[in-house]
Image: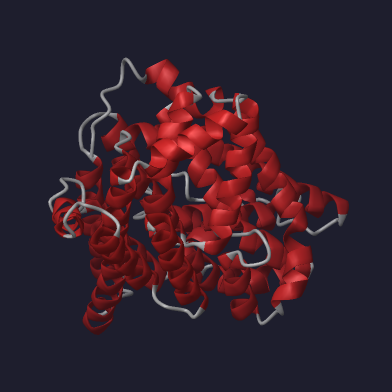
Length: 435
């Protein structure tokens, strides 16, 4: 009877998803009904999980990093960053394509959302790429593919949430994401260089005066990465404190120094960013309640038993995990996917002796690629709307970039040293603080 009821409730919620019901309502409603009709545990467990989340010591990092991202997104930071990057890299064949990858990566890492990057930065990059004789198809593809390439770099919000949900050291995750993230950026940039060389795209000769001028314009943005990264990995500040430093620094530079954000605009940014924070925290808290039900019903153990019976090889498990997470990345936003799926996968991966930090990088790299995977990768729809291109032709456009990301994904999955290199070299010597 319990199994029949579970199947019936699951079908109801799948129907709700298809009908467009908000994800927090689906997750929260399923948690409540499962606890009432199936579990012997009180439904108060969901509220307890919400309270535990609200009192988590690192929770303040989420609103502060989101606020920082919105400040940069609403200012002319992206224009200054593009100008500086182009002055530095424009002389390389395919230099502007490399600029597109680098700028999109930095912007996604800062804002925590690929959608914001495609809308804000893509709108500036697209005319520049087309003007410099890149085809519109290639330009759309590289912007769409680079829209989520900052997921593995500090101060990536998905890494913070993954660490909070799974109990993995967040500083370790940030360090582990550096080389895999650089691998993805290098492959995309390399493809841009190949395209520029093959199609003989004109380059921009290096100009010292132009470089110095653009560096002067961006001079107030340059110290921020060094303050945040150096502070965390130097052991001087925690991730939460780094979030506060980022918010104060962005507020000071964009409002008082560059003066690109007025008081009215600042109020609007504050409201919009906190709405996003609220949406993320609601999803996170309700999903933790659902995870609590799954743990109570020993679902991770049942999944583990099923996997161990059918899969005994670590290589096959990783391949199955990659395929499963690509589907998850297509169908769910990254925050929902993390809080719902990660707690179920972690204990199974542990049985195959996969390092928890390495698992986190595999997990996030898969979800990053899922944003680009047809038929329902979210970046495809955002690009379709932003650049006024039908979504079906975009499927063909992103295929070369998907192949590159899949190569990176396989390397990250099957060569753990890529993720764990800095931890192996510096882990015992550098004090890494928990959030």
